[in-house]
Length: 138
Image (cartoon, rainbow, N blue to C red; front, side, top):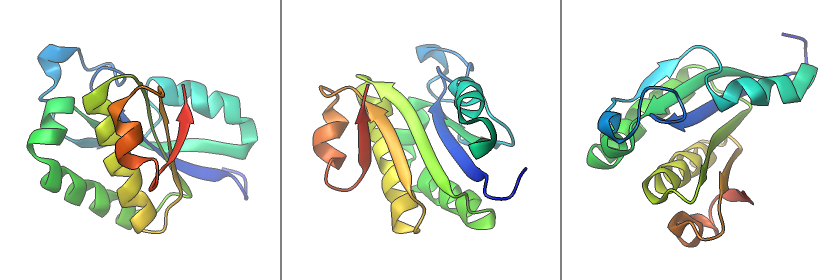
């Protein structure tokens, strides 16, 4: 990786990571050491400016049913190899996914890691996180 290249960690739910749909919403949190799904396109779009070095994958139900444990695991992963930026989603108008993206971005920001997510303006997470998290409308 060239010097000056942004190291990005990407957060995705089970659907966008290619694990499955609602039937796999209980997929436990895991860290994959590469770009997955839309992270591949993100890496390609960034060219030599940045690369997705890891993807955190978690099912929507798993995130919300075990929120504190999942956030603790994510904090550990981000602490062990801090990225330059965390990208979450995009979650479009998916409420549970949007809330998870907001929580993950808020955690990263609290750790001093810049973070950004993409949400549709009607996503309920926009109201929940707009004062704490950088949100790009999608």
